[in-house]
Image (cartoon, rainbow, N blue to C red; front, top):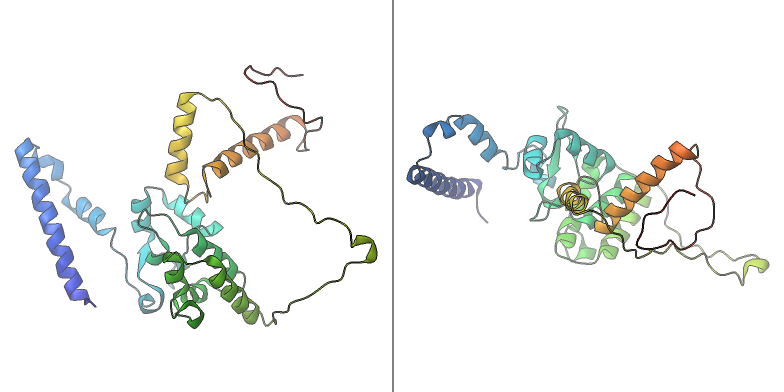
Length: 271
């Protein structure tokens, strides 16, 4: 395993080559020196991608701080705070009030492993962020001596890790996990279980400009907005418009009427 000093030397070597190459290209292209005047800002931007170090590193680190993550994701600090608040990114608060984000939760593309968020949400129902983060990074025999974070990153099934998480949540809460068999009253024995809500495939036609902006918005914000998919993004947009119209036209009540098929291919007029 490489030491920190060895990793530092490797990084400095790569950065030196990159900087030399950039300046050589700039000289060949006749780029004025003024372009590189703010060298301190350039250095800060380059170093922002480096994980921060804290006393918790040996347990659950390394981490990104908020500045690093905003630059990596290309979003505002408010967007990061919202993601942490709704639980779509794993965040832990330091004693000084700052927030850090464990690097192992991110894929190479900068997204958060969705199954890790499922585990995080389960654990957070019974424990503080640091306890949950330690749990995710602790090797477990049931996972082949892997941590849950490594298990998920390795593509193994969520169910195995989720069962462990639920068991520990019950234990933390001081409750025993019980398997209960409930007999239905006689009149309910032949009733069919309630069907789960299904999805509906639809085809719509929108302008190219709206379509392009929608795709760009989805790509840029899908992580912080917790979009499970493009369909989820579109569904939330439609739900928002329904909510707006309810508030405007029905005082917030659901619309009533017959859900009849719509006429395709032409605008609909108000009835």
